[in-house]
Amino acid sequence: MEQKSTVQNATIQMILDAAQLSRQSGQFLDAVDYLAAALFLDRSNYIAETLLRQLIIECVEARLLGYLGYVPFGYLPNDRFRAIKQLVEQDPDISIYDRLTTDEFALVQAAAADHPAGNSPFALRLKLALQPPQHNLEVIYGFREILGKVDIDNRYFESENLDTDGGGSTASSTDPPTPRPPKRKLN
Amino acid sequence: MKSTLPHDKDEQARPDCGMSMKRYKNELRLDVLTARGISEPLVVDDPTDAAALDKAIIALAGKCLTKVERIAFALAFYCTVDWAQIQRHFQDKYERSITGNTAQAYAERARKKIVERAGTSPELDHWEAAWSRRARSKMQQSK
Image (cartoon, rainbow over all chains, first blue to last red; front, side):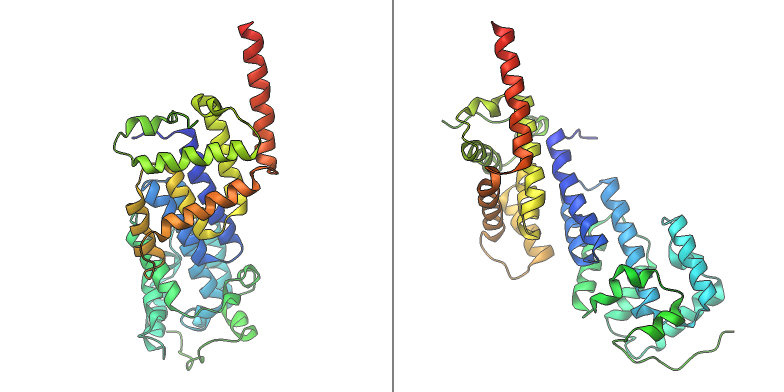
């Protein structure tokens, strides 16, 4: 493995710090840009990959509790929501989707497919979120592109949204950009 | 007088690294020194002093630049890719509409901002104090 100078390490660290700050302030797109730059310089940078993984999880989670909270996760009971969120916090290396039961997963997929915006980037984002992060810049760029294409209301990425209760309660306390679809019944 | 090139390990290990990137880095160092009123270009010939100066510059860059400036600065200062690659990276990944030497212009804007702020930067104050101490110590040892 190629050895980097301390100055090069400091340069990458400056970019990673900026990514982290952007992430913490809800500027996810900026964070992805910084991470792309860090990985452009050092393709196997573990910290950048880890941050990216966390970022993707947080984006999914933000939607889980906000925008995407309507569909598909709004169909999950609040206590399941909270339990999943807790598990994600304990071990962010495992996908949110891996934590769903088979029935829940099927429900989530069906709800996404049925959503009025199903063929929109909404569905693409969901598909992307379903994939585990790859050690591949293309995933980052795809992620950025999809995020950039969609008119996302920043309030859904604000940290306070992540601290609210499950999807149902969050959904009722926010103003959704898309209409809530008809309720589906759990199996 | 412009100094000889710096002593970063990677730069020595990569003879194909674009000379213009090294020039960017070196000129930035010297401009920063000038802004600080230090007329001692040999600072950048000492690996320890140069690395410490670079770190102070990076810390300042992390504070005073916008996103595109910060990214362009970092990619240039890292010194392993050339301007064409940086431009392609910006074009492919951030701003498809940019043309010509936009990425280089961002890096240049970054350089100017860093130099403008160099005179009052606490990061560089800290570096200069440490550098002065080292220089005094070296002088005493040589006597």
